[in-house]
Length: 297
Image (cartoon, rainbow, N blue to C red; front, side, top):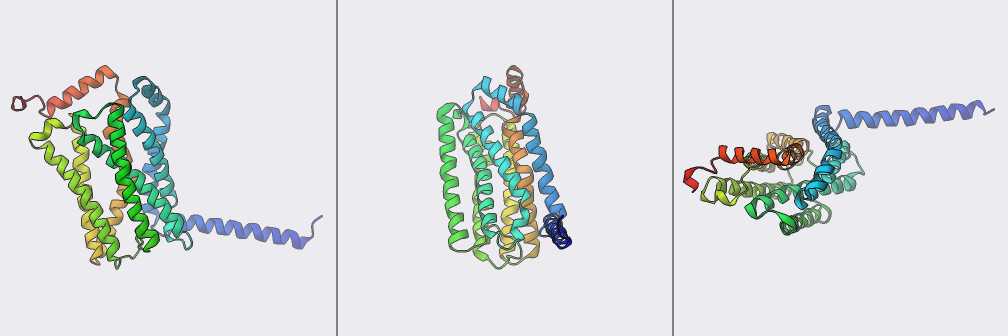
């Protein structure tokens, strides 16, 4: 039989481990950003990944029959980024944990870059207009996206790991003017691109764009979102507490709802509609949007 002292020490060690685990769980759930912040991030992200998993078999059959290079590649990219984003949501406590700065910065860098890759890819697809189709278009679309996102990663990595600018740590960072100036420029570029597409849609160049109004609802949403995010970064850089709060709201909304919005805009019709019915849906949308008005003839 084991001595009573050994049994007592073993019991104490188990209690300490249990207390540490409970303390970490409490900190993850309630400390740092708080319960509601974590809940709003996690619930939509988990539900979206579950939805993709439930649709996986049906999606695979549709993809194997259609053999659309762009849709196959985009669906695979969406899966990868969704899992990466879910991981980022689960490890929110790393942002406030000493010793986890490197891990948090790397996770944030790759997660935001993956989401930016999807965003830029869709923009490149839209700007190619009616020529967006086939292997050549896919190569061109993802080539442009990889170049833009690669430069973005390089710039962010230099500022984060070389110059020590805390790009991905947002607690009480009003004094880091370089950081907020960078985010202002980042959001300004995206806002300008979305604004340019909206201008094309409302001008004589409209017929050069893909005839699917859902794309332009997406563009309008992202234009407004990036304009708000740019405004929040500008306020925060000038020391306004409301600006930091508003910026946190935009970050939560982006990570929680952007991927479902992207799926609904670009992939949902492909997976949910039969081909012959899908053509009728597109025709109806084009007609409602005025693509067949006499003014365009």
